[in-house]
Amino acid sequence: MKIALNATALLSPLTGIGQYTYHLAKGLQALPEVELDLFYGSYWNEELRNSPVIGIAVIKYLLKLITPNSYSVGRFLQQRNFTSGVLSNRPEVYHEPNFLAFKFNGPSVITVHDLSWIRFPHTHPVERVRAMDTYFEQGLRRAALILTDSEFVKRELMAVFGIQAERIKPVLLGVEPLFHPRTAEDTRSVLARHDLVHGQYLLAVGTLEPRKNLQVALRAYMQLPQQVRKRFPLVLVGMKGWRTSELEKQIAPLVRAGEVRQIGYLPREELAMVIAGALTLIYPSIYEGFGLPPLEAMACGVPVIASDISSLPEVVGDTGLLINPHDDTALAEVIQKLIMDTDLRRQLSQKALTRSAEFTWDKCVTKTVDVYRQALQGG
Image (cartoon, rainbow, N blue to C red; front, side):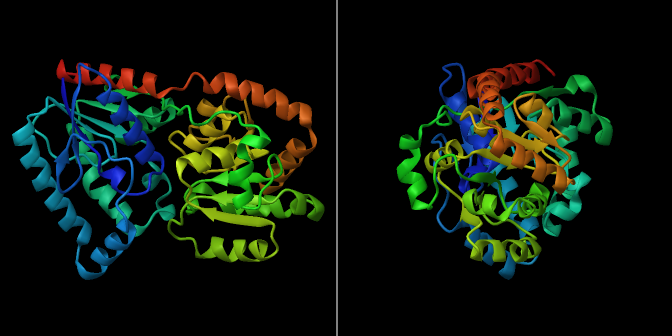
């Protein structure tokens, strides 16, 4: 089976969609029955990238400054390159793992991770919302079958676009073996670089952008007693996103006081150590199609505090504490409870390890290949 996969998400530092694309492609390449061609925007290749293009963010920014309608121009050029490669490679199925499918004369599969730009457009850059509104639905309608990361997103597609249930195939994501429990000795060297102590900090992971709702986490954290904040700093891991000016104003005095540590984007190996050393992961996102950071924390045996909405209850289940993402007082109370209750942390940790073992990339790849076969058979 010859598959074309859009791999342009691998050109940038890997966040959720990039991780999905990478692990899916890696799994597909390991299957003898699959021949995989990867599209990188300006060229095709069979080689799987494992590092982003250096300076890609600066390049994109400069292109926006000097090119009117830069996204439309880039889209036109990528479609031309895509079509040229399709004519040469002749794939049987095209899989678009990142929302916006190119035109393809054959069966296509599209992965829809969420509908956040529709439900919460104010949390995205204007140009992104415009691009999604322009290109998304036409690719959705052309697709033979649609993958989602959760049952929640399936329901969203049915409600917003009227897609028939049988066309939508939820396939849960996985967690890589890199994320597993670590001892204080295991994490010592990495944590020392960030002036952290194993089990004595709270953690929030994700791109700094409005949908992650970090302002509520910060307000909750400020309600903790000062002596607790001094002992348990709040560590923010993730690259800077968009519309962060108000959040940065909120963070600045806490950083100066040493109560908040802003680390930025971390390589995967280092991220796994920082997650494994945390007392808890705080994830009050207002909307998620899946939520990889909670799953990665669960695989490390770290209790999760997460929102009780969207897809997060599907992932976390009864292994963490679910809260209203708009109630900072309730979040503060739950954080304090986890800090004080060692037995509760131990119980949640064991549950998390058991549940996280159900989520594997091998399962994700196997079920995705099944969907390719269905698409080839006419959906």
